[in-house]
Structures are given as structure tokens and as C-alpha cells.
Image (cartoon, rainbow, N blue to C red; front, side, top):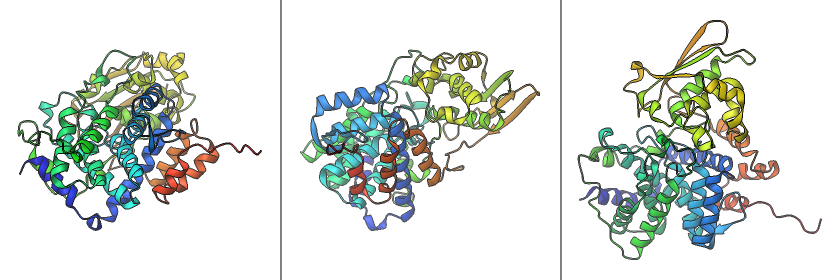
Length: 440
């Protein structure tokens, strides 16, 4: 049996009743967190352009574009929601995968589920299987063979799995759905390391979503894909792909992100936030990290929010001067803040041998900060949101309130938050803006 066939048999045939409560609770938390990320990124250039393109290309339909008055086809809604969710780099991720599954899998599962009228249980199940497949594919790649860590390279497999589960595809159809998604997904060059500062391509998650959905719907219509796609031992580890299916659930290993910047620098931000003394003059700031951190674009004076998200200098200067709240999310006006730019220009960023073999399983960092009383040092091995240092549901809800405030009216926000606990029907009904009362 080919690897994709084995995965497909698992997704198509695993009983819903056997999925443990802990996996469902993890899915619920990840959903709440992704809604927060979507609210934060709603008006970003990436999300705004994606919504306009989705409406023009895919047309009206039954699936809600979250936090807007648009309803589009499943592909259009899922693509637009994925763009907003991934826009500000504050969506969930996974260490082994070194990328983001939720911003692709969750929008796809909700869009297809809403279009089909699926039950709450069916949509949650689809999310769980989508994460499992996507993260297994990503993590199975030997580090030496990885051309890019962009999530668009692998998230389409999970999207196809989630959509195929909801569509009721049999194992053979589902195998072809994932094979089509994998074969036709975006190439996705590593834009996070690009020195061009104007790109909104980023992780290529939105096109991977459409590729995954296309794979599922085409397979239902009889299309075939190259189902031996993952049977290449030099590029995919079979044991990671298929070991422990149904015994461990990969979405429970995901980290959450309290700050709107690349996960590579979250340990540094945590350390800075703990060391900083507001009002003190920062004489020097040295950051010691793992070698891959130096491969980001790391602009000292980024021109766009996307560029700022991939800059240790900018994000850490912002945290040092204005605290954690300045990264929840980032105000575009900070891109021209002279004090932030001055400190960003003075930060020392180096790779340290202590962290040489940490990535991708870890993204540790040491910060050495002098605020006029001599250097103070702090090492953070597990930044906030890691499995070893998790965020609680209360912290996730607080994140939603804090970063959603700029996009979502407080009264509306107060309706969305309870709906997250009442099921998808109530949630879908409140995800569009309240219409004005014309009788008032």
C-alpha cells in the first residue's frame, strides 16, 4: 500500500467516536486562536487583496468570509479566510513542521462544512484529520532535503484530507485528493528570507488551500493523482508519516503565538519583555540565537508589516521600547518610529553555538540587555505558547479581545466569543457584521 493510501484509509475510515476528548479540546482552542489571528489580519494588504480576488474569481456562495458581509463559494471563502488568518504571522504553528497548519486547514474545514451543512462533530473531526495529515507530511521531510519551510508546500495535503472527510470520500478517492493537492500545490519559494520588502506572498497558504480543495472536489468527480508521491525515502520518512495513526494526535503538539512576528524571535521577545524596565535608556541589546534565525530578511528599517514580521531587529526593538502589547498586533505607524529604528540599528544579532542544533524542534534565544546598570542576561528555551509553556484558553480569549479590537466592534466581539463555545451554527450566524437597524 502506498503511503498516501495508508493515510487516506485512516482519514476515511477512522470512527468519530474513537477520537479522544483531548483532541477535540485542542481543536476548539486552535479555532479560537485562529479567529483571533483572522481579526488581527483582517485589514492587512494581503487579506484585503485576497478578499477582492476571491469575490471576483470564485463568486458568491454559501460559505462565510469571516468578519465581513461576504458569502462566497467554499474555495473563495476558504482562500480569503486563510489569507487573513496568516497575514500577521500570529497563527498557530508546529515545531517539527516549522510552519502553520491551522491557517489552511481550519478555513477549509469551516467553508466546506458550512456549504454542506455538516454537524459540529463532523467539522471538528475534519480539522483534526487535516492537522494530522498536514503536520505528518511536513515533519517527515529530512532537514537536508527541505528547500523551503513555507507552509504552502505541505498544508494542501491536510486541506484535501479535511475536505475529503467532510465530503464523505472513500479511501481511494481520498488518496487521489491528497495526491492531486500535493502534485499541484504552490512551489512556494522562501519569501521570509527574501530581501525584497514589498511582498505579501509570505507562506503561500491561500493558494495551497485552493489546491487542497480542488484536489478533494476533483477526486470526488473521478480525477486521479500520483498516489506514490510520498513514497520517496530520501524525501519523506514513512515512520513519521504513518506511525501511531490514531494513537497520537498531532494538533495537540501545536504552539500558539502571542506576538505578531516570526516564531523564530518569540523567545527573544519573551526575554526582552521580562528584562525591560520602562523608561530606562537602552545602552545595548545583544541577541544570541540559532543559525536559521540569521537567514531571515532581518531588515533594520522594514518598509512593510510583512517585512517587520521577519526582522529580529525591528520586532525586538519594538518589544524593548514599548512592551509586548506593541506586537499584539503591530501598528503600521511603528515602521517609521525614530526611536524604534534607532534601536533596531544598534542591536547585535549573532548565532550562538549553544543553540546550533536546536531548530526546528526548538527556537531558543539568549538576550543580553544593558539598561544603564550593566548587562543582564536571560535565556528562554520555550517561548510562551510552546507545548512546554502553553497558553491557556483564557490567554487565547484575551488575545482575541486585544488584537481584534482594531477590526471588530466591542459589542460584536462580545457576541462572537460566546459563540465559539456554542457550536458552528451560532458561530457562523455571528461572523458577519450586525446590520444597521433602519427603523432607528
